[in-house]
Image (cartoon, rainbow over all chains, first blue to last red; front, side, top):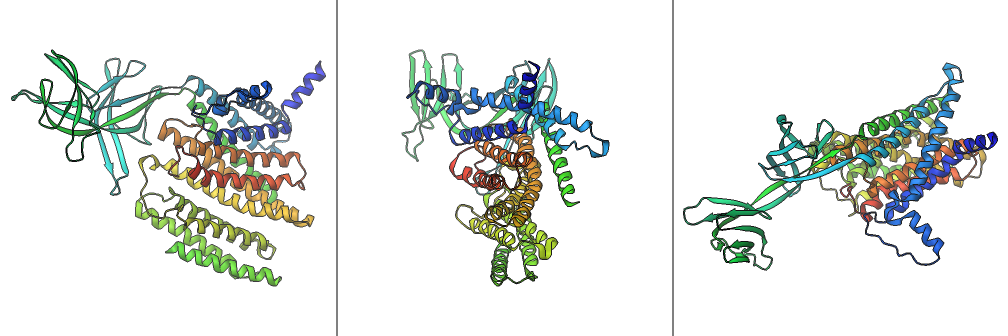
Length: 320
Length: 261
């Protein structure tokens, strides 16, 4: 029994197994890198039942979450851990001057990275919030995210140069973050959250006036404007209207019932008159909570340092 | 303009090297290392000039990446040639110069528009600069390693094969930490700051990981295989072809988050 365990241990910690698993993981990577992994690929289970089972086990449309890849990754993690401890014990048996800890740091980094990645995959949560200036939304933890301002710049060739949101974050009734400029590549880290500027959208705004003396009221595309005797939803520009005669589609709820109304500027929509249509930017903000990321970051740093230390020493050894 | 002059110098260098290889003269040609260093410096000067024009480090387009790759390869070959002197392998330097020449030919193709464009917001990051610079310096060394590995495969003389094996290993051993830090570590840190996810299984990320695994397999195989095994140089050849596919193939064939790179 002891011999069997010893053999199993030797197999699981062997460099040959590491090599084989690196090749297997590489092949999985090639498969997942070539085939679409967004769920659009479906392979009907045809042919021999064994082949169908193997295909289902590999999951070509979701290779990296399939059982075959996970098994290979888990085996690799076991091999890496055992190999690292075995190597470390061997290094400590050597005289101090002859020890080489670069590979140990690299392997430790990979282990920390794998643990962090598994934790991150299991526990990370994220939500997306599309806000117009002045709007606010609750985050999963009850905090309030408000968009104070949004700015957008283009290069002369029309490509986006920068876009940024000025945000407030309130928690427990107190203003925790005020007027933070959120940009792409400049996220806000607050407690367990990281808040990212991910996108923008240009949305139409209809200016509607009630009666002759009423003040113009803005109505953003997709939103509802309610009044005393009904409401209006601004749906979309009319795709059939010509380039020189823009028409817009509304859904009007009035006392006489619900109807779809197509209107040009100056025409009536329910109880309102369409005065103008302009556009406004909305900001898309991603809020992510990833408790595994600090571990991933620590793993990445160790991997970089370990790799550099390993090969600097090896190259020095070759020169001498 | 500087890139064009560098291209002309590389062509002259190839011609000079070809003459010395055909004549089989024992004396090393004195011009090659300086021609290579001059073209490398000129190519890096192109990057600097473009960077000044856009007020950002100009390594964000395919054209700029190819210029950087060719420049680093020329500098690496020039330094090798100066340090090794008469011991330097002529076929290796010629092969490496030819690869740099191919990078420049590719940079003048329609696949790599050379218009100077400032970066979009996702690319405006110091992490991106580290990510791209380290990755391409690593890949330029992998390109030289690829040439050494091919020579190793084609060589029948054991002493020469051992010498090419040593050269291949040295180039991979310098390129691997740079590629690891650039493609995987700085790439993940930048992705986390820009997109809010440090790893997305995006085709570019996946293929960079496959490339890294190929070189990792090579370095592990050296611990368990004899140096004469042809599998070792074959893995280095495969690794560089994978690196090329990650760089160019993914851009043009597989859509993903790195569509601008």
